[in-house]
Amino acid sequence: MTGFGRSLGVFCAICLFTAICAASANAQKAEPPSVQELMAISERGILLNEYDQAAWHASDAVQTANPKTIEGQRWVAKKENDKWTVAFGKLNAEKTAFEIHYEAVQQTKPQEFSVKEITPPEADKSFYLFAARAIEIALADFRGEKRPYNYAVLPASRNQLYIYIYPAQTKPRIYPLGGDVRYLISADGMKILEKRLLHKSTIEPPPPDKGRKPAAGFHSHVLSDLPEDTDVFHVLTQDPRLPEYVGTQHFVYKILSDGTITVEKEKK
Image (cartoon, rainbow, N blue to C red; front, side, top):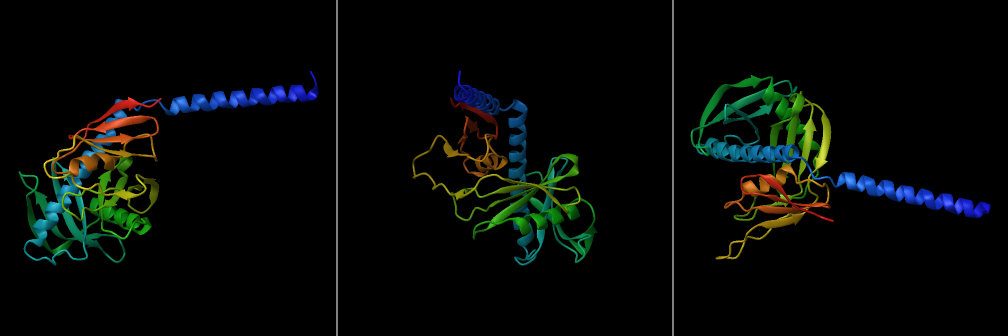
């Protein structure tokens, strides 16, 4: 065999080996997620929906007496003993305390909150402080569209915090999806550890025609091979709730009306 022939043979062998390795890698990436992975996404999505509902109803309760009561303040919610407490206040100038002006506590009915004005404001130096710091640095980093956004704080491992920023609903029966980000923030709320773009653009599916009840929604997801926490939130926030199919590169998932995620199809 000539030198050229040997070189060509080596080159072909390398190409074949590379193709095999690539195929092997793709095959590994296409492994379906574990039940535990899908359950974790469901749990975060369910908690995110609870947070959103708590912030909404608590804000309404505080503003009932005076619409300007919490103007310019942050809200931070936390769940303890299966009930949500929402604190309204501001960071002090040094960012060493979160000054709580109002506290709303969830009652027996999830949408009902009792409100207490705190005078003088209570200077919190633990969870509410860390969460308010985390919200501030996430909002400073976030680059969204010219539209209203909501935020939420959920616990992560090692006392770290997740901050979600997602589009707010502005029209009845139209539930926005996408254009959202999840941040992982240090336990003291001072540093962004990870930024995860959940969806690129925001879509606002029109409501179904009167008399027509769709069986489910559908959207494609190109940033990951898994559904996102906010996909679960999207299903749960709708009234009435509507299951959603999520198509990724290798799988089609179904998010049920209770937030459970199933793998419906594996793409070949």
